[in-house]
Length: 322
Image: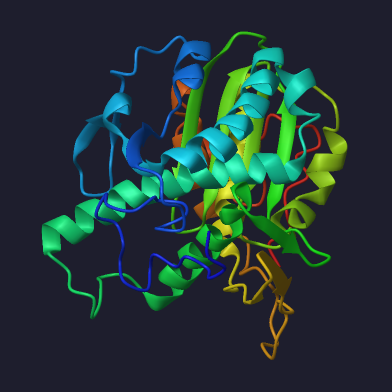
């Protein structure tokens, strides 16, 4: 194993030749592994033929979503992580709530990066992009590259110096038999998942700011099982605030003797404005309408009072609009 950091965005290494996580760091064979592991499909009672629409509008089955992985990385590092997450998910909220946040971060990060790998492969194949460039902002590539470096902690030692790059919350649900579902927003690296009696909401690269932003509502609901409408409302708030977050986090990344040390640069920097753009109830209501589709709430109904969108929380504890 060499000591350099594998950085796939430098040469757009999304060709199913090298390990998606470690590149050519290990010498054992590369095989393809599913992004949605078999155990997760079994816990969710899925066949794997369920479908997902990708960014290029193509429709793929879960079973067809695979990434290349080195056998040694799979057996020595990914499988043990999957076993930890599987045991927790099987136990439900009581198990998931006890997980180390860094394990959840790595597992969610691997999941999201796997989806990103598939998207990038399609983009490279479709546009036959050269190493000179890709139709993606430098900011996004920077963010995705940082995420990839961070989840290399699955197979090598990655140390976060006195900070957490993520906001992750795990909440109990009233419905003990909530069917499996997940959402992700790749531009903001936001992810959510529901299963059984728990839900997870994660923003993977905000240095914990979204969790602080929603501190009031999180304190209000602490350890209280949420209804189906409440968890969708809470999730909508995180997706919207992740969109309002207006910083591109910068990190000092230093490889030393087989370890990677990551330090966060101050988010404030030299920019003299708040970390989040102004919360606007009208825009939030549009997000909420999408999350509340199963209950048929119209935008007019949600925002009938422009200063007070409807809420399943009492009090609503919404962020201020100024």
